[in-house]
Amino acid sequence: MNYEHLKSTLLIILIGISVILTWQLYTFQPEIALLDDTVSRYVPDSLNEEREERVISEVVRPEQIIVHRDEQYGMIGNDEEKFDLFYEKLLATNLNEVNLLSTDRFPTQTTGNGVELVFPTSLPTSIFLALFGIYDEELAIPTLEIDRLFLFIDQGNAVHMQALASEEERLIEFETSLSVGDFESNYLEPFEEYTEVMTVLDETASKRLSENIYLPVDPVYVDRLSFATSPLSSEFFKQSLFTDPSSVKYYQQTDGEDSYTDGNRIITMHNNGAFMEYYNPVFIETQERSNKHIVQNSYEFINGHGGWTNDYILANWNSSDIRDEAVFQMQIKGVPVVQFEGQGDMSLQISRSGNQIVNYSRPLFELDAFPIDAREQIELPSGEEVINYLKRQEFFDERRLIKVTIGYEMISRNSSFVTVEPHWFIYYGNRWQKVTFEPEEGGANGLE
Image 1: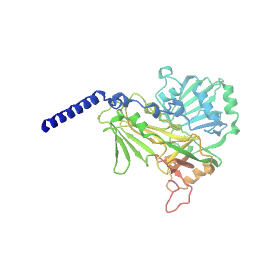
Image 2 (image 1 turned 180 degrees about the horizontal axis):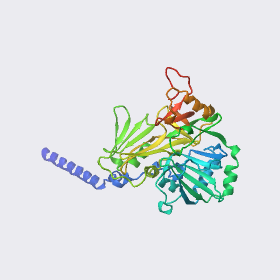
Image 3 (image 1 turned 30 degrees about the vertical axis):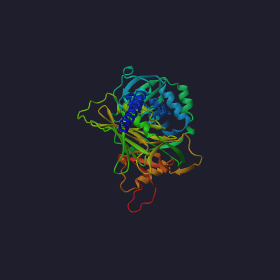
Image 4 (image 1 turned 120 degrees about the horizontal axis):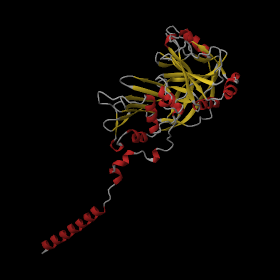
């Protein structure tokens, strides 16, 4: 009797459990957001705050504007309002092609007045025309790489512009719609207000159309600045650069660096998370080449995920059968940040194979918009002193000197604070080197 009663009790309990489980099954709500494939294919608004697109003229800019007057030269500081205003006015002008010139000098004006724009690197024709809002079919000019521009008033009393393509040894002359009166009164006549500069090393030029290096005649005073920094979210780049962020796995490499991968692409953090490198391997042996120039492609790639976190301008690019590369370098008050703690520069670097972006490296922090109040002016030697110092170095070869400029070296004081210190730098032997002005010791040559 007790046995039958026990069986009935167990049966009732099992029925009760069955009812409870059935109810839970019918009322269970799965986390659909985790399963919905579309969720992983956009960047959440919270991660996209303060990201911005930029027009191409904001990231393709001259590094110097030099005013010529009777074989004298004055430089408009690239942190001055007049620098930006002149560039904006120039790009708003209408261009009419005048002629392809064959000449032995740039500019062709031997003693005339004019304004020269020096770009950090050559501009392919497509980018040059895009700056002026011109499509290729609107103004048919040869496919060239334009290094410099020179504007002057011609005999017909109009402002003309010569574009130098030094590699191809060609000049193109355009007639512009710039006002002659405005050009004279606002840019040519205030010559005494500009920083006096001199040309150096032009006697060593091997090209028929040489490009002058302009350096200040007097010592230069440049601010040493400090900035608070803010880290950039690695989650933002995971969402932006991986096709399916939900499949991304985290792991730590043998050298201790953090990495994220979806089994194909990989993001690796360097310098304790201060820098990031994205790698997207190409497995197809023959890649179809993109019909877009690497500068345009890189600009669109960075614009596409709002990667312009501070001021960056196009600094260099190169193209080969295997790989194309473009570099956008950080600037602070018009001064390029050439080194980070004695090593690589602060830049956005893009590599492309065929029509696919295969590598992207960049800082993973941004500087506050304004420096901390504590600042100090550093006196740097004149450009002439720099050149004379270099000539005294035992193994210095003028023919390998490409560029001489004042730049910043960034020093990281801690994870949220950096200082930028000004120095003279040279681009020599295909790499940046700091000029230290220290006495030679143990064979040191004053370059780092």
